[in-house]
Length: 295
Image (cartoon, rainbow, N blue to C red; front, side, top):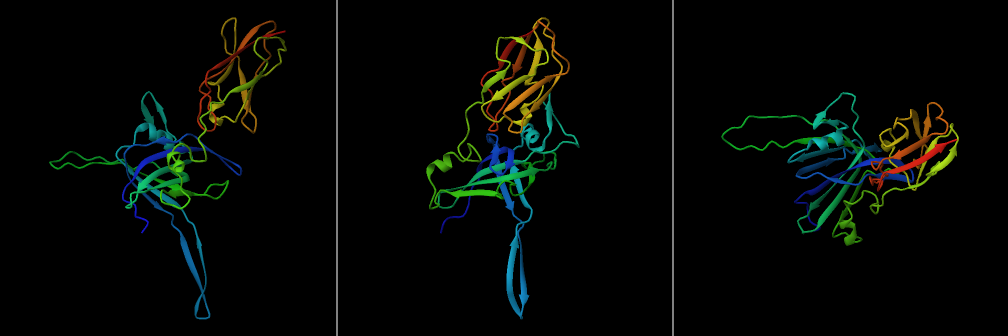
């Protein structure tokens, strides 16, 4: 007997950042402590065709996959991520317009033979959990939160779950040790870098009609392309330059297009923040400042 599962721990989530054929990526997994139960229901449908007074054909199809999680606690920071809510000044703000992100959920279960089963559900969204409360009584009663998610197959490869057992024939130890480092393959821990900029640092004679361009050595997160992470300002008075940010299809090149022409014979600075992340969630190692002077 291979062993039935008798335990559950190491609950993690990871944001699905790209789901296309050949480009499936996730942010680095984050642990959710205190998992109690994880109930997966694939809701599969199975039908049989009867003909000539007997069964002739059978077919099955995968329906909605539900995951019910019960945990000792569901911190506001985790709720914010899983449900798409903002946290401002330590307060979780729930809005009807909030959209939960696609996430993967991973965990491991101890089997009765002492070996572990490792699981990733690779694409799902969570709904707001029920909020319950009860007064204290003379008998201690723990009130543990639960949250339900609906999971689907990935667009890029039709996969909906990954599972391995420590006692499986092809299992190697590195599979278990790396299971929660990344949903897909080897974890990417290398920070992104800005390979080149246009203009280059300390450039002079730059046309007043020029744009500012940052070229990265790898794809960055779409959410990183914002005015907090990329901006241009004038050296003389530190005034911000108004403009629009665009990014190429590969998310490797960000362009700042000033609303009006730059001032002539003036020095400017272009800043790229260390908050910029690649598709694996690695931050730019250091902020990058580039100066240039217009013609």
